[in-house]
Image (cartoon, rainbow, N blue to C red; front, side, top):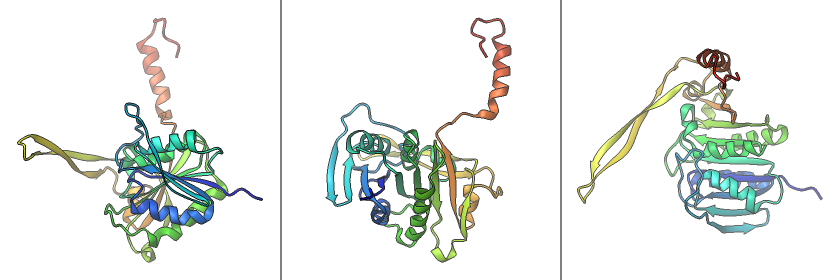
Length: 267
């Protein structure tokens, strides 16, 4: 009797979000599915993990081939506790999402969705973070699920390079208008943020984060932002090794000269 693939699913919008429900229903026929998702939304938590309060797991659903737990921690917590306490074999795939809203360009740095996928990289689990460019809580993911299913099957069959996961962003346009898939790089850009000042009913000030995204290379045709704006699905391979290798020679030279004659000059 063959063992079904084990698929670990999480997100950062919380277990009740439409995106993770659509993703879960799509992958259930593909293997044994374990969902460990935040009890509440954890957007913008990046790779944070909980160290100051107890983590709690609650089993919500248990059916043949499908189990769902909630965790009061971050997406990274969800992956860590699943691997440490709930799984007795190595997962074949880690899926995060589907995120309500884009995780393209520098948003990947803040994304709890992508942090969960990257956490899987540390354990050599092929991971994919999915996002749809629709922030609404009632976003309709179903038209895109056949495309997502085919991506999952392709990665499941072929694997990924060790230490690499995929950041998949899908434009919110009719499926018939999607031009295809572009494997591309992360756009150079940043969020121009503002903190709006308000006064609450108790006459205390508070601040609300707003802002807009600034694309520093709008004409670069090899980026995720370009692909999304032209109706393509953007796939960016993301790695956990954040070393800026191109900077190593210049930095070695800089500090070799700076520390010349010092005992610590081991460069």
